[in-house]
Length: 203
Picture (spheres, rainbow, N blue to C red):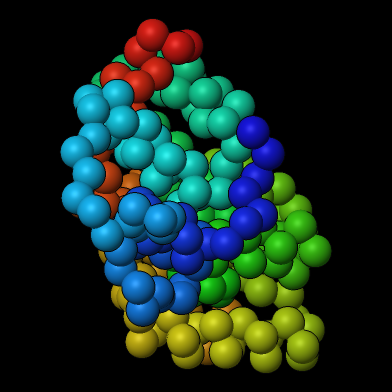
């Protein structure tokens, strides 16, 4: 499946809060569709599918990308679910989003793709790059870019805080990765074990 291009609030009403997908909130809290108001009991498969969809929409990745991350996480020592979340959280586009440089994950990818960022002093254009401790992310010295990022930072400061595994130098438009993220600092409420179970028979 390709990246989702449809109405984002519709997804939020179905899956719950997804800060990486959209910063908007819907006035209507019921599920989308004709029978959205009626109560619904999900099957065990439906619950696992819903958790999987949360991770896909929040991080803005395709199904094939998520499958590759799950396969890679299984090869590493430790809890597959926590390693999966760590891999997704340490992506460059997510770090840019968590620092507040961009309002959503797609906006963060656009900043990176268009060459508005430097990683450790060098131009970075790969959103999926796996950041490491001591990496430094900086906005390029362009007036229009910094004006946009300043606006994004002001909005982000009112909505969310910078997690402890990152340090933000707002005046210099610079962020630093202090350490690998732990489960407590993950920016999405979900059960990663259900995602691992969902893919247990698929990959």
